[in-house]
Image 1 (cartoon, rainbow, N blue to C red):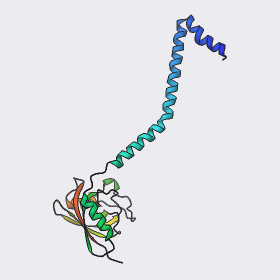
Image 2 (image 1 turned 180 degrees about the vertical axis):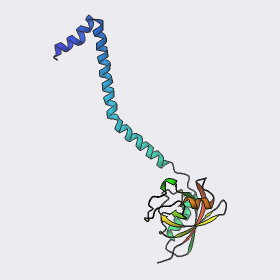
Image 3 (image 1 turned 90 degrees about the vertical axis):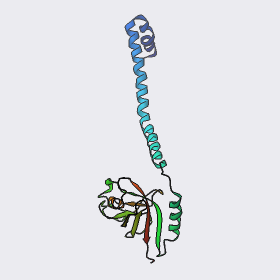
Image 4 (image 1 turned 45 degrees about the vertical axis):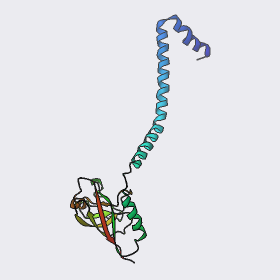
Length: 185
């Protein structure tokens, strides 16, 4: 279509009849919607990436308050882990969600929420840890077979069986004292 034909169809013909004018307005609207539609299709991926980034950032930003005594004891623990004395660390404990039942742990075992096991970031696998709930005095002995918790707000992740024994299964978090001994090699 040439320039003259375009001008004739877009400018002169709508002036002559009302139907043609409506047709031209419809074409302009459709062209505008097509442009906006194309722009929306092109923006879906960047908007999705931006939304994902904001969501992930907000999840990582939701750190719970870290008790001062937890950080102090954790740093003391790191300095003295090579001795074979009994060590006590105060902090908060949580337990595994049900979705982890049947998955592999860091040492290769299949995780079972009905066994007395725990996750700790630095203790060697197989270390037995006595965990005492400071709110009710209950204690339980667990074996470390996984790595975690992956936040400084908690010092140990327990299986659901251990959380039930300690009496905080429905609460999700408990103030605990962990006691362990590492034999010097």
